Image (cartoon, rainbow, N blue to C red):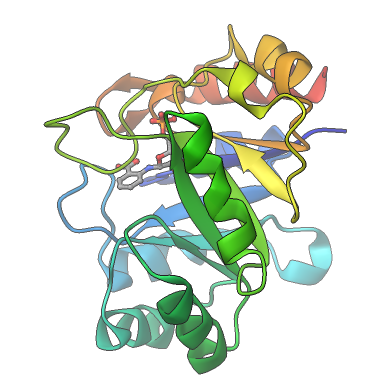
Amino acid sequence: MTLAKICGLTDTPGLDAALQGGADMIGLNFFPPSPRYLSPEAAAALSAHMPAQEDGAPLRVGLFVDATDDAIAAVLAAVDLDMLQLHGEETPERTAALRTRFSLPVMKVLGIATPADLDALETYAPVADAFLLDAKAPPGAPLPGGNATTFDWSLLSGRPIPRPWLLAGGLTPDNVAEAVRATGAPGVDVSSGVERARGVKDSARIAAFLRAARGT
Ligand SMILES: O=C(O)c1ccccc1N[C@@H]1O[C@H](COP(=O)(O)O)[C@@H](O)[C@H]1O
């Protein structure tokens, strides 16, 4: 079954929809410019609504963009995370250092627009536990992700991905089944596509996305 991550949750109705729909991972956004940003305290309050890990809770993934060690440490002092999502320009060396420093698995994000962008898979494979393949942010976009932009999925065809991976970028309840069919992605990640306004999650769209992803 296709794994599903709901990213950028900010409130309990959205979290409840993700839990009830059987999300495998939830994303907490710690990039201050994002409309989905959570302070460490807000993330801790939201996380308190999650069931215990032994009761089958989804993995809590912390999204960071070129964050300092201190910023990540401040988050981890407030809320338990199961994985770090690195959505910035973190080098392989920085990725390895964060993985070691915080003893957490790391999902490195690669922005994809051309076949050459996939060459980074080999560079990061020794230091990343998983990959997230997202559309490269359009020029002038205010954020490096969360822009509701798809990329040309055919770029992935015939390209082995050397770690577990999620497909992201412009996914919605309406296109996720086709995205999985076209790419063979073992998992999918969504933020904008399950919102009713920028940064505001919609429970019905979360449920529909998870149904559609599950059906694949
Ligand atoms: O969602 C954000 O605000 C965000 C900010 C900075 C970096 C990444 C962000 N979101 C991630 O972007 C992808 C795709 O999002 P979308 O579904 O196209 O909106 C997803 O991995 C989010 O985790």
